[in-house]
Length: 231
Length: 205
Image (cartoon, rainbow over all chains, first blue to last red; front, side):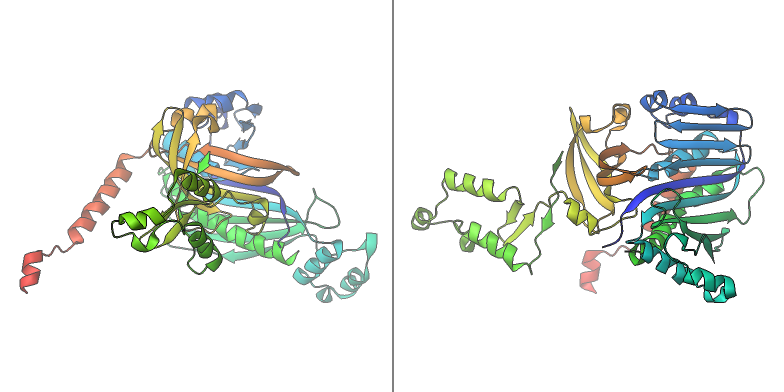
């Protein structure tokens, strides 16, 4: 049986040009992006010309800077991220410039034992190519055991409309058991090939809508594989 | 919430079929296409008590029997925790369905569901919900055609496990005129591509 995923996190990141001062829970509620009840239970960290940060309905975190808009949740259904972004930039602010975007998923889980996690680390990052440094890491044990700290793998994924990549990262989990916790993050990134100045967000939102499910499926495939071999 | 999903029992499952046959042996299944004679009717125990006992015993598991094909249609129970864990999803142990509201009546609505995560069912499920299952702020979204997600299971949230049974209505962007126009064009192109054949002419050929 696969190990249990203990924390999950999804995010959509748009890169372009934004006006952070627009975003407020009351604005989202007025435009029916969230319910009035959710607006009333929202928490605002900061709203400023340069940056806005808030949690909508105790669930969706929104962070906006002049060149970046990000929404994230740690609780399914993650499809609400797509709905929120589609409504905000497809319906309400279609003239915002969005040229690049990413769909992210990350998880934390525990390997079946500390030894298993070390085995997984050695498999992804063998110590042999590291010379004497690697030999010392290989022979380390117990509290002193060393090994993989971060590894990123990238697959290039281009199509007619976009260039992009699927990138996975594996690290020890900083939030679970420090001996057996594993963190895996996957980012599916898209750059629009022929962005027409003045075309706003529509190209990006259309592509996001088409690719959201597949990007998460690709992410889950990577995560499930690593979770399975960690059991 | 009552699950009323229909599923034909796997014909290879002899245990299930045998159990159905055993429980239905009081019905004249071999005579279903003919009217029963008085003599046959006298032999068949179709008393209300017998039927009630059958309903009580099997109804939780079976929602119907197609006598002509001798097939039972099972009501799949909500997946147990163990079953969900054998279908791991990277959301935790959550089964997620996408639902479309079909009808809305006072205080409840019915919907068609398709599993999107945690299950590999390839059939539609039909379910009735109380309106109280929907968050108050989302209730005005409940109308025929509205799309929602149903989640059932346990989910690890911020390091703790929570039981999840959520109905979340999707707030989708409005249809644009251009999208409706594109859809109409696709539909017209599809109709135009159909080659209609006159049945009488085809027969004559």
